[in-house]
Image (cartoon, rainbow, N blue to C red; front, side, top):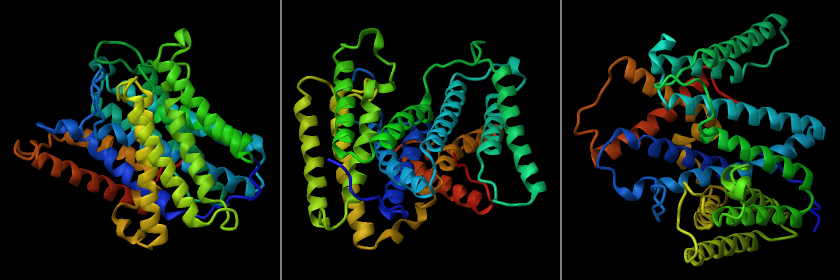
Length: 395
């Protein structure tokens, strides 16, 4: 089955808003560590716990919306007459950037040894400085002097990260290493493979669907221990990629012309798929537990169904009912997502260095939950201010 039309590439309100909502909740759940008495249903389930906590839904939602963005981004580049080689180079560079940032953030989780001559907070601030120097969106200009300055800043950022990489020792004295890839690194690996798959299979719906099914089968094989020594070669054993490919397929469905599939039918197909996948998750619970940490098929099915149904609601509310302005307050989280993700690292480091603290009453649920919500809004507000000041990460 060949896709006979080209995908339109204007920004779609529902995709940015879905991403913004997901990022808002990612900041919220990542801040739960700072308070006590958190309701268990809000937390991540433990490794062997059979539960779907609210926190366990957020990362899959981000992978899903990543998949929805891939066709739009690649089609835009193809319309600009970029070659496949140029697009692959862009994909690889983006993935490497995410892997680098993921590894740096993961290593700081193990603490920073005093032998480095700096505290963990100072190390993180320098790390963020390196990130922003390298991947900031610098103004486009034909001025040669300005270009030299911007390139010089990028080189300075690389030098900062290399310096930190060399001197790093964690709290146990261990050097920089791969403990795991971190959230950004997992996104990088997932994006790398899924974007390349879409680039080469973009005109064939059936093959794209089969690639999604293949990742689901790989996830099942990993959960059953059939992969042996090959388990983990693909992070999540295909589970993360299945989330993303489901997003790719949904974008292809919604971008089919009205003459091929009327909007009402698109919504019914998507809704039916979401419900069917949720039902599959319920049925698969007989064989596997619900576990994000184990990346089980049950977790994959349930979160995929939730993401599809939630996107349909957001699409109806924003693109059909014109209520996108309801979400303007969190809009920067959907358009400057990487910046928004890193701002909490900046804030936590500043809080530590300044010995800033809140009363115990505010750090205990339920007031603590209000504090986490406010922290999410503050983070997004700072992201917006940074954007106005010309500071915005883009890879």
